[in-house]
Image (tube, rainbow, N blue to C red):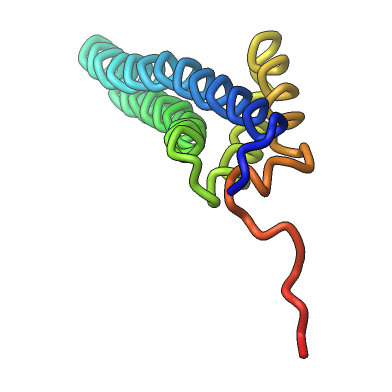
Length: 139
């Protein structure tokens, strides 16, 4: 690959997008674990002290679902960040998907999601990641 100025610029954007994906995903995973464990503890406490033990199960179930949901939303960001740091060809679709998920996290995630989408949708991105830039010609 020829090292052009545009490729070096995209490399900087890739590093920033990768780092921010990882930085935003780590607190989300910790929050997801906190909600998961909190739901289990809260559900156990509510079930133990309630006249209707099923309410404890509902609280625990809600904590489990919400906690796992938060973790599930953070996983694409981790995969995208690692892929971009390694400059793999499959990092582009993962990063676009993670950027779309970041858009719902107002305001920081939205700003980052817009930046990540901009970086991934540049014409130089495919070349910089070693992806084919056009469909192969058929004989």
